Each structure stands twice: as structure tokens, then as C-alpha cells.
Image (cartoon, rainbow, N blue to C red; front, side, top):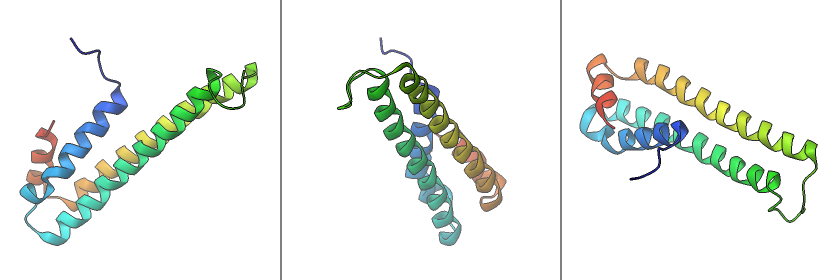
Length: 115
């Protein structure tokens, strides 16, 4: 049995699955391109957050080139991880709100069904 995925991973996976079917759901090319661009912003936000998380985790665990971290560096690393995840989630929410304006209700509902 696989371990449960993190919520951020599920959001990212779902958004990338949606990105893969935009052309099937949205027939108007201009709106499809806008929706693709928005979902690509989600991808970039989560890739950036993951990069920051990994770097901060390495620092917190003493795995970076800097060696053993101080208590403040550990606390700072965890704040960095939280802030990166929060920014990515905020971008995801903003994109979902904008997608509601770009897509028809039916198109948006179809995309919601993609897992």
C-alpha cells in the first residue's frame, strides 16, 4: 500500500491532469490557451515551493554544505517551508477563481471531475 500523499501533491497532480485535458474540454482556442496558461502558473508555483521546501529541509536537517544548523536556522527553515506552501496554495486558489471567469460553468465542472 502506498503512503498517503501530501495535500500539495494531490493539488499539483490534479492541476496537471486538468492541464492535460484542457483541449478536450474547452473547444474555444483562445479560452483554452488562457486556461492552460493559468494551470501552468499552478505548476510553476508548486515546483517553486517544492524547490524551496527541499532546500530548507536540507538546512534544517544539517544536510546542506553549511553543516549543523543553529536553532534559529532550523526555525527559519520551517518558516520558509510553511511560507512557500502557503504562497503556492494562494496561487492555486487565485487560479481556480480566474478559471471560473475564463471557462463556462459546464467546462469548469468537467475539469473538476478530472482527478
